Image 1 (tube, rainbow, N blue to C red):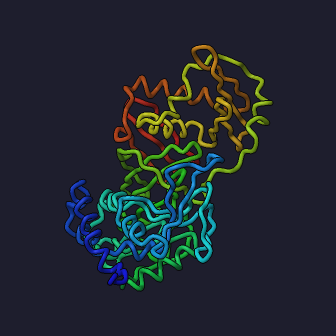
Image 2: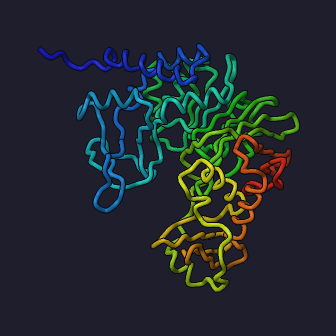
Image 3: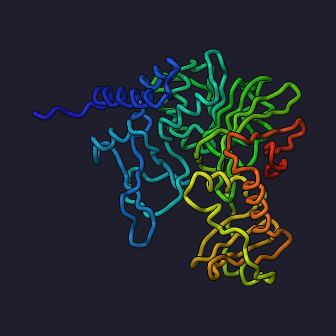
Length: 400
């Protein structure tokens, strides 16, 4: 006789195995976080989700397969306790879970982040017993539950811009016995009713540091923030807030990316051919190939973030081998095309986009190709923001 599935029991060895694996990675040296991971039932926060199929569809788009306990119990439970990000929403629209189907394409806008990254964020933020924390981006609520288990629910506030996602997370948190402060709110503005906080941790990325987060952090408190932009260069920074309202801290190593805060998402730029038709300057030989910021390497990932600070309103797209930089704010554009053994560039508008990127590449190489951990970010008392490096000029971060 086959016994009915019991996820609460079946999850126990899987959760223990996940806890052991994260501990072996050095992420659970803190006994409190290890206990939290061993206790919180992740499967209850992800009753359904999508995973990418191994093969793309005939249209070249990613094929997303729905995973639920009813459809594939073993795969669902195994995925819930794997170190995998589980997608729960696309394009800001809640899937119809009652009539689900395979999806072709779409941009994920909510998920349950891979457990190793969730734990790493809390650990990197130097969260300790007694701290009050603000989490920006509740998502499924799993990360929130870990913080509640570690600190106690009364010390945790979590906000989410999507009220439907928040409602689902709130129900599960309550069912699991956790009662943090939850609110539907835009992370750009933090959450004043519960300020000040000892720690603020963001599970989405911003183009620059929202001033409200600095203002809502106690002097001596820390903000772990994910920075991104329209070139999709990413960095993480751990800021310490001073008594005068300024903040400063290092960029952290690693190549981690998060979904953009919805208010900071890139605008549509239309047809690249329309922009290219107006490029009357050039062509000239490019000093650097686009691969410097597009290659699938750690250096290129970091350099793309640095280049983004120089052209903060630019977006990059590739069509028929031509790389287009398009800035819908200034109306500037550049097009890089293969030419012989190199590249040629045409650009126009008030901002010479590729010329600025080339200047950043020059400075980066002259400084010895410094990694993220050699940079820091300063937010002064009036909100101006600068990337700092001892061998490179200070560079304003977008918007300041």
